[in-house]
Amino acid sequence: MQLLPVILSGGAGTRLWPLSREAYPKQFLPLAGSESLLQATVGRLDQLPRRDPSAAVLPPFVVCNEEHRFLVAEQFRRMEREPGAILLEPVGRNTAPALSLAAQMALSQGEDPLLVAMPADHLVGDQAVFLQQVAEGARLAETGRVVTFGIVPTGPETGYGYIRKGRPVADAATAADLDAFVEKPDLETATAYLQSGDYLWNSGIFLLRASLWMELLERFRPDIAAACRQAFEQGRADGDFFHAGEEAFAACPSDSIDYAVMERIAGSGDDTAQAVVLPLDAGWSDVGAWSALWEVSPRDDNGNATEGDVFTHRANDNLLIARHRMLAVVGVDNLVVVETPDAVLVLDKNQAQEVKEVTRFLQEQGRDEHRFHSRVHRPWGNFEPIDAGGRYQVKRLTVNPGASISLQMHHHRAEHWIVVRGTARVTRDGETVLLTENQSTYIPVGTTHRLENPGQIPLEIIEVQSGSYLGEDDIVRFEDIYNRTTGD
Image (cartoon, rainbow, N blue to C red; front, side):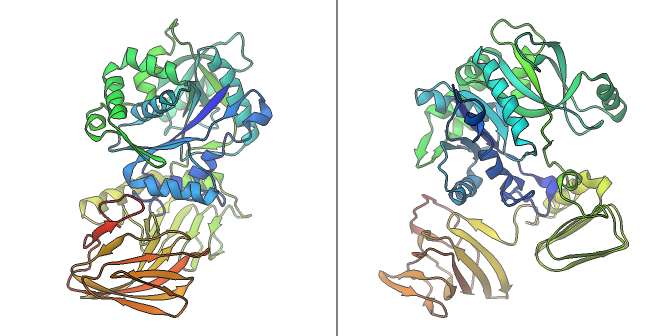
């Protein structure tokens, strides 16, 4: 029995601004421990063969957008793991097309595994319970069923969709027929759901065979199936990356797994595929708001969850995060305070969903704080602004071991590089030199150049740019190991 984790990494995570930004959203952040949410998801099924020796877990597929591809690859590199594939969506089209790309990739490789579709940005506290239910779900999926997992509710939550359970499944200990998906309720309705015991939260986790998914999609949404087939056929491989055909995928209708297929077979008695739901009581959270992060975080005797250099006095039930400087909180309760190098958020924890008003304001003003952190990530590492003036700017560059920027040239700016840590290999108009700590070099305007890190530790450079135009688009690229054509 082969299981293929399919990790859906398309979210922007804007409700966790300012830590989560569009260019570096929450799935790439270590919000609950040393691993990022994506890394935790990658390893979530690793121990399944110990519980079920008949189960073989394949290297995971990740489906993400083009902009995040190098972030995903870097997360795997840090884990010292290889992905099965990183499937790239030219534009976002929701989860049904995303799962279809993964299913087609698996089938094209001559396999027909059980797909375990999981969002990249969820937490699971009790790994043993999760694996137990996945093993049960795999057994059911082996018989041709479509399995979803419903979270056992802990309260009358109005921010989640719900699943209504039907009759118990005869050959399963805890499974029930999937009777219906239900939209997010108001508080009174959610309370009634909780009291009835017939409802579970919709986790967005699904398990079914790859060929069955394509068969059901062809039956219920042939327009999506046709567009995805064409996008896959027109796609191209690029190392671990697979770029779906841009024109065909952009023409694909946007729809979720729930709406496209699951709702159509739920409670229908469909003879092609029975839909079942397994309850999951495993400390799950979608970390969908600051209040949710506070709920899953360790807290002190006063109920404060803190990270970084934080001082509290007569303060209770707060979420306090300091990423850049000391944060002191005195005499306040039930707040969220998040400090980053370029933004500070303060809000009532009960109003956590209203962060969307901040990001809406930033978008309307044409500002970039909703999209980028002050530290900008690139496939070779990252850079962070230090200072800027009318005709100059200063940055700190960090180049990962074995990485390099492209061979490039600038029309409008000169650069001065100073090595502060590690070893740099610098190519300048065909000449190559090695620089170590406290050594520097100058790159005049119009000079073809490249910066590489040949060492085993991160290379840190202070870069001073000067010239009439200092924008990131002043790059003429000649060679690039990451096959980029624009940006840096």
